[in-house]
Length: 482
Image 1 (cartoon, rainbow, N blue to C red):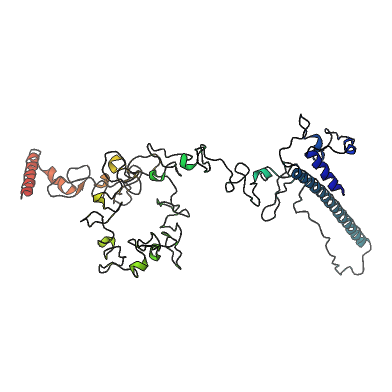
Image 2: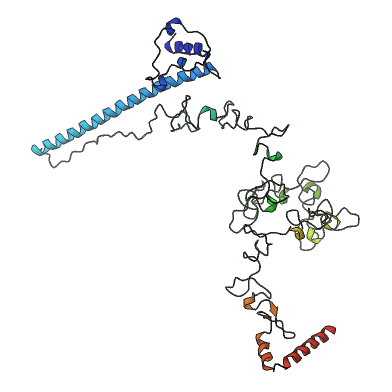
């Protein structure tokens, strides 16, 4: 039996609570105050108050790990000593070469050679560089997938740093994911379980899964949707938006909307359209499944696939290239699926009914029969689109903003950024009210008369103005009567 096997047996006897040989017990105990931490005898440091070893894991495996660590540290120490000797020899060789060079130069100056004009070329003295990283025995023993060793300092008995220590990784064999709780990663059963009785899902927040309130809710009063990016749910303006500058559409994949290249692409060859379902765009059969019995193909339009619809029938209206969505026509020309109410020829919207027969999403306010616009509310109850400026509750007037924050139609005057108040111009450029003169349709700043009729009115005496006004009123009344 060699020395390593004997040492391993001693460790195993100690860790399993067995009595060691008398010869080993009579050996002098090491001085713990002067001995290095790496050379301590663990038989004197793992004993509890009851005389038994305080070990809550497999002793044999721990003993093998300690022995392997000691052997590796010895190898590292020997390697460092060899490298230090090699470096010292290299430095000595360089110094000797430098001294020889100086002596040769001095000799050449005292006794010039007859070949003084001939240039003698000598090979340069090689210089050893020690640019490679030298690992010490206190370096972390973790290797990544590229077989590169971690350069952090080892802090534990397993010879690893705080990031790569064994307790940080999943206990499942051949799994290199991090420990998320109970010694395992999420895939292998780690992490905390939802507090809800009978629920085995992972905790998302507050001790519960996302289905039982583990995610924060939208701050809008009465809204029970989950909060997303931006602090609100999707219905109230939260979520991700397209990263294209100036675009306010939703991000459907890749950080962009459909118009700017977001989302999955159709699997058909040379097709760059967006996948609408089943891996294909609508033109190649993507979208909803065919409504024919026992058919699992994707519908092209109108709920029917190409096999049951024929070679993609087109709208019968002359000049229309859209697909026939029912009844021989496209939606714009009266085609499509009809309302299920008997005698109704309108296109179905929701619940197989048209809007007139209840085929629409209704306002969520009790006793309100109006159609919902946004946030499940009608316009009267705040369902209109709000200004996208942070903290603003005004309604949009154009470009996603209210008038105060730059929304609405701008004045036609060159260089004017004011809001159009009537006639295509702002108040400063004649927008707003029309000329007070009869049949004049010009816009006047602040009301009154335009430039063409202002001089005419000012030329009349003040007492004639009421009479002219009366005549203008009577004339307008007579025209209206006719």
